Length: 343
Image 1 (cartoon, one colour):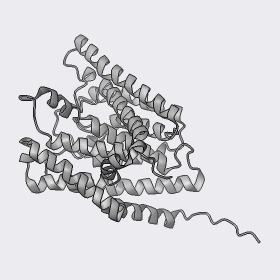
Image 2 (image 1 turned 45 degrees about the vertical axis):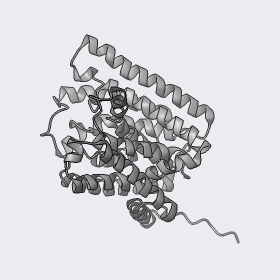
Image 3 (image 1 turned 135 degrees about the horizontal axis):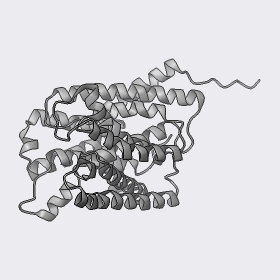
Image 4 (image 1 turned 120 degrees about the horizontal axis):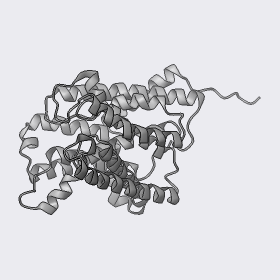
């Protein structure tokens, strides 16, 4: 399936947004309006990243028309291999001991989950996403998982832990899969996606604010970043849908302006990995004592290097390796069906 123009732009915004969440400056004391803009990067870009993961799985397995039989099996093999690679890199990044909460292990778990639902139609995916968003946060709350907990790790931590709990974040993946099963090239689909996204944003964040007046301090009604409440998930999903719709609609109109951010999106795995390594090399102070200069250096350097690499060498180094490994194993385990030669 060919790349959809604009998807890389949305993914690039997600990566740059996560960098901002990690090393963005604290302007709350001197420039509250600017601080509010930076605060938008807390929680929402990572949710967008996972929505785009679901969309990518849909494109990898046929796009609007899901693959069947051997092609679907090949897609599952490729996705499973990518999950293993992403998990391995994620564990290495965690071992660096930076203050960054690495999303890649949860990303890998969600990839494997995605393999199970590739045949599902859009309606089933949307229904499942809604049910997960509604039920999973209550399950975590019943288990007593706190958003500030630091002693929940391993498989349990990946599933229901305080940060990036796969049980809840599966809603983002399912929403992205549903979106990827739609024809984003159609203007009507993009408009509908944007309207739904805006509505979900209002319901999620607005509903959470109202609910907080009734149950102040409750995790279940919070819209705070990474609270993984129903309201936050709904609001974040709305933002993600709106960003994707706008990116897909506007990027083709200004391809030269979009190209630098699209390059970051095309090299998202590499860019995310390198930025965590850079934080490890520079020291924890770039996270705990962020400055505008360091933040801009991260954003501009990442964008420039990705743009240059994309223009001259194509796929990023990690993307290239992951593609070769996943496609190679798929070819070995599920060879392409040979068409009979006419005689």
